[in-house]
Structure formats: structure tokens, C-alpha cells
Length: 462
Ligand code: F0G
Image: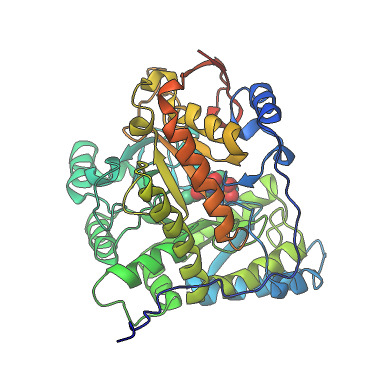
């Protein structure tokens, strides 16, 4: 009897209209390029990269609908039409009345940190993010990580590793008092944990706790649609809800949120903050003219705001989010066939290779993840980034390296850019580096900038 065909394949919900050539270089060329870049993938020239999995930030392919919107850019200094179309969509999909555009996410982080934090206060969050924590620290706060312990374990398969541990949060509140907590900074999915989501149940519990203790709750909604997708897939009661409905419900628990539009919104530049707190909005609207530009453009061209407005409509389409997450999942499943260690469960925007297990002969003070990112680049021109001790930086009080439990290389997927064939090439390269791993030696850091050292730090081979 003929076997019944099981239809389980998925495909991209688009076809390709414009292409950008990329070229494969020789190993010799890449060895030279890596050395010149101080063994830091952030310092490579992009033309020396074959498949660029450095980040999903601003590296997305816009749709024809977004490009068409670019032609409708109203480049007025004040009151551009595109500002209003963006504001309308922010209101419609995130559900908050007030809105300030910024040129990217960290500009919004900067303003929110300055507005909400009094020096000496604390910010509690579900794991740090590099720029987010730095702005909180620069505004005078101490960041306290209150994510569940499972998030720090690469092999733990907890379905919602982005959850906040309410006991940890309560311990902090008991120690310092609720008045000393500037706000809770909740991100979803959690980038540094491996793109891991929080559950709606956890968010509701955090919301109740914050309400009881009169603590503000703010949201880094940079990749919120991916969090919504995971809630739909994994959490009871959400299977039949749309991504837009889940997003709206998530946002309803927060006083305000900020977004790097370079991710979910599938544009190349942009960010914003939105809130239901009129006072915070008024301060931000005033501050934005100092740092970014008038409050109706916030450092963006009118056309950029139009592309963002249209990106919001596309980001909540189920097929778009699903395709994205399935692509990451495909990469993980292929890597698993070679026994390559990476963070489980597979997260939203990236695969995070576990450099501690991949290069278990290299101690953390010789930067195993930095080393691994370089080795993969030299092997095939595939560019990932370090997310370990270099990214964690130094403790501002002691000046020592912060040694995170997770020492990872992130392979991040720009939206709508690469095909399954690109992924196959990347996987084969990583597998061949894995085969030769015992020959790999660690790195020394020879230049270290004061802030966000992973961007510009330089290394040499041991
Ligand atoms: N929040 C999260 C969760 C982010 O991932 C980023 C940026 C930001 C805030 C800051 O936004 O770059 O627009 O200023 N993440 C990029 C990345 C850089 O590669 O993960 P930005």
C-alpha cells in the first residue's frame, strides 16, 4: 500500500524581486581579514563576509509595500504625514496613546533611563541586554538580574526561559524597598538568554506584583511578535489568538515600552517609545529634541517612518513570524544532526552556539566564544557574534570581567534575506570547525574600549 504523504514543509510567504550579489573569498583572504579586524567580527568589512549572521538588526529585506511607502516620504521638518501614519499604527497594534520616534532602540533606552531613574536606584530585569543595561547604569542605576535560573543553563529545555523569578524580585524588593526600584525592565524574547520568551502567565504575575508594590513595569518590545508567536505555540489558551491579539494583550500590562524597529518592523533604521503615562511622554517629547530631532521625526527621515508604519502591519502576519522562527529552527535541527552544542530550546531570532562545550579546552578568560566566531568566519565567511564574557563587560564597581554562565556565539537571521541553501552552507562550515576543534587556541584581548567593548575590542591569537 502506498505510504500516506505527510505535508509538514513550510516555505517563505514571498518570492524574490531584487537580489544583492555576495561573493565567497578564499581562506587566505579571510585569515588576513580576521587578523586585520583584531579577531573581532564587528570590525570586518561586510564585503569580506559571505553569509552575514552577525545580527538581525537593520539587516532585513523590506517588502515591495514598504519600498513603495518610501516614495511617499513627506520630508517636512515638522508634522510629516508619515509621522502620523506611524503613530496611528503604533496606537493600533501596541495599544498605547503616546508616542515618540527615535533613530533606533538605544536612543529610546537612553531617554527612558534618564526619565525614570534617580541615581542610586535599582532596575530589575529578565537578564541584561548590552545597550539597555549600559543606559540604566549611566543614569545611575544598579541592574539586578531576576530571570529564572533555567535561563542561565544552555541545556535546560524550560519552554519559557524568559520568565521572571518572582522570588528573586521579591528578595530585591525586601532588601532595598519598592521605592528604590526605578522600574522593572522586561524583554521578550530575551536576547542574551538565546531568544527565549516569557509566558503570558508570568507577565500577569509580574504585573500583579508590581501593582501591589507600586512598581513601574516597562517593556523592551524589540522582538515582541516573536514572543507572541511562542505564546501562541506553547501556552494554553492562546492557540486560536492572532499574533496581533497576543501582542496587544502583552502590551496591556506595561506602563510603556521601547522598540528597536530594526528587528520586528523589518526596516533598516528606526526606533520609538510609546506609553500610557502622559508625564513620561511629555518629558521624552521634550528630551528628544535635544538628542534626536523634533518630536515628529526623532532622527528619522519621513520615508523611514513610512517604512516602519508599513512594517508594523507586516510583522503581525502569522506567516511572516512563523517563517522566521521556522528558519532558525531548521538551522538548529541541522546542527543537531552533527552533535553541535547550542542553547535549547531553539529561540526566536538566532541559534546560540554553546562555546563552553564547543571549545571546552579553552578557559573563559581566553574568550572561547570570541575565538569560535572568528574560526567560523575564517572557515567559510559566515559571520556570527560573541555573546559571552566580552559582551558582558566589566563590573562598574570592581572593574573585573563579568563571567556570564552563558558563553555563546550567536548566528542571527536577518528577516527575509537568506534561503535554506545559505543555512546548509553555514551548518556544514560549523560542523567542519567542530571536527577540528581541538586544534583551536584562545585569544588575548589587546585593546578594550570603555563602553560596550564587544563592538570595538581587539584580540590576538595565543
Ligand atoms: N533591545 C534589544 C532586545 C536589542 O536586541 C537591541 C539591539 C536593542 C534593545 C537596542 O536597539 O540596536 O536599535 O539601538 N540589538 C542588536 C542585536 C544590536 O544585534 O541584537 P538598537
